Length: 444
Image (cartoon, rainbow, N blue to C red; front, side, top):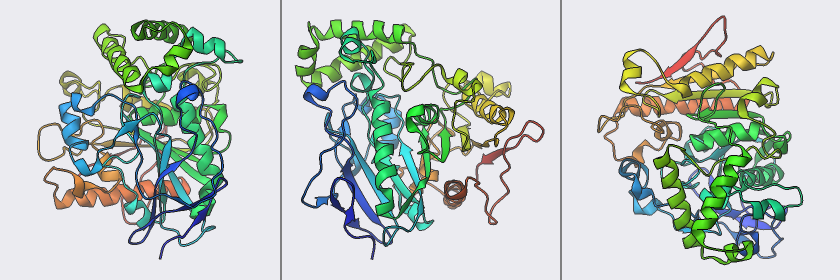
């Protein structure tokens, strides 16, 4: 059966009936950020009259070619069926729902993809909602602006804004998508009072940004940080406006334009080319990522750890974890028994929540060495498992891999339902407390 035509606040939408669920592909959640809307916060959609047929995934946001990294190209971007075109008109989301009708009040997982804020999209081959639908959970995945399109800061943009703000367009996209879901997901059978924001790598930093921002109000009820978020660790950086302005001025100089008007008229491909050059120069100079969330006193009032210290993060249930061969982990560190900053950041987050008088987090450590090569439990390796998409992977997965995947899906969806991952089918997962430290090791 599946849900039929859905009545959203802006117009009616139809999806694709699948076995046991309905898939809505490429739903717009904001106006295309093109022309005069380039380098501006997302703008609310106009209403439409005809039924919007959400039957095809839309373009990924403008980004560098994934082929620059051979390992991840082979892992996630090598199958043509799942490749995406890229365009500035990219603010779309996708919904997998098992509901038969509105008002079923199903829990909602809101997924933010990773990719160093320079790449990725919401319908990559490792993402899918079928396994969650079988557990009675709705999955939403989104696109958001990347690179310079999503995070450029420059004096022209600051002067243009009445509040003197610039940057964070990609995060504002995420907030606009979250607001759209909050306002419309009931029509898809979801519970807008039970939304879990989750992401991996840059998506995890994004999830931490959203739970640290006043702009998300009461829209988030749970959060999952996968290889990114944390306290006194993790990947989040306190990026100051002054530094972002310097990078923005260098970027504008490379574009050879003399006004904001000229910048907005440049072809998107040139902006992307210059963005990629700036990103490469950032890595080469040791500066690191150059287009990332910035402390703008609007999305982020101050630095990430300071927001935690102040108790300004949402008082909700958290799950956080990392992988054995995550980024910033060297062989020497492993020989010494060190686990790296992301692992430490997850533990510190839980301890800080406890110190604040809140519920400690559920912490995991994914240690399965994936078959097929010697990459081990690499950064993002858990995605195949927690989305239940092992059969799309090129690797010679074994029965025990599918069993691990089923366990993780059970833990993840239980957490989405009630803020507690536990199930009578599997080992008890205790929260990480100072007096009783516990980390759930996920392996075969």
